[in-house]
Length: 130
Image 1 (cartoon, one colour):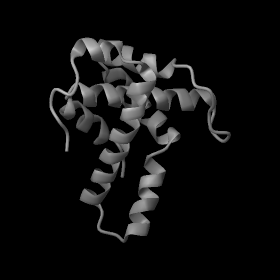
Image 2 (image 1 turned 90 degrees about the vertical axis):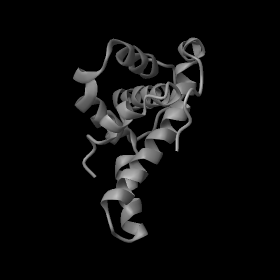
Image 3 (image 1 turned 60 degrees about the vertical axis):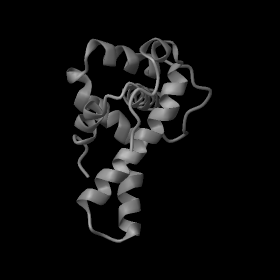
Image 4 (image 1 turned 180 degrees about the vertical axis):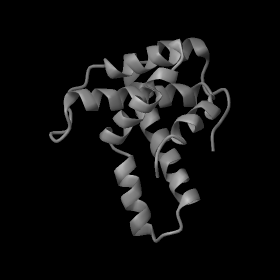
């Protein structure tokens, strides 16, 4: 599922938070989908409802609340870079604070993925109640 040594640490530290969030969004969704199919034996319609409920700004913001006290200094730095990144728009039905926390989580997931920290990603995903 994941490749090791995807990018050097130096290049990773220089990567924009938007790029980290871009890849992190896909990693987050894939991991949520994997957890859903491993833990549920319902029809695809039900599985999709679970996915939609858990792959959204609110769920990502809620995940931050669960993990914020366990983040390392580096993880917190990456999260804050993503959270504070300039975005040109945010969804109408979501507060800017929730949207920015979700972007921070996506950036963190992108960083951890590109830094091959898969165990850490699984620790975080396992905190989701699916």
